[in-house]
Figure (cartoon, rainbow, N blue to C red):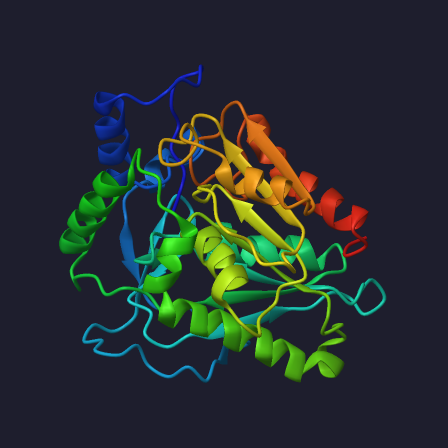
Length: 317
């Protein structure tokens, strides 16, 4: 899911503001910088060449009738109706490699994937710091073929999400295909660990919005995935029952996020109560979906904070 700008002061969302937020996000899920204003319209594009993408062995999405398609918006690109999952490696210079790896899960409400802003750009930045990054293009819920129908389906979805408290623990039961894709990603990285210069015990996961929900769900229900660390970037933060071997957790969200920013931070408390490592960054402004977009808000600093956190734990340089 992508970003939305709100007022300068963060405050609880009333029903009117929730409705306005949902409508605004649905109309254009990331209010980009002013310089990108001309690129706000969703424009269908050909599926980009992805020569390094590796097809995962989870098979086609059951019951899918609409094929994968892509569109551009805000100078970025998005995939939807993904029916076959892939994993794209972004490997660091061997001289810089730390042996750590990260599965990167873009967001998009399980209806689209922000492949550039929350996928490829994140992976390149991690690789530059010596961390092998793998962008997971996971299977998605089906949406209408035509753009107008797609926009309407997103509008309805956001209207139902804004101001609610989606629980990652409960959502895990509805994310069987996506969790299977994440498990397959971890299995593939471990299988080719020697080739990719990765330590099988130092593979983490970072997700954005819906991808953050998948990251937490993979930690809770992913069985053999067992990420060594996880990052939850503007995902829902409801409390969960965490496993005994819960990994270190990094959380970043803006207080003015119209979807999850002004609700609760129970996920952080769940880690704290279990005495597990957790770092929490609550930015005053940033909206939802800031990802790697350059903004004037301090939320733009989330990646450097995440990289510093990885260095502190010995995963990055």
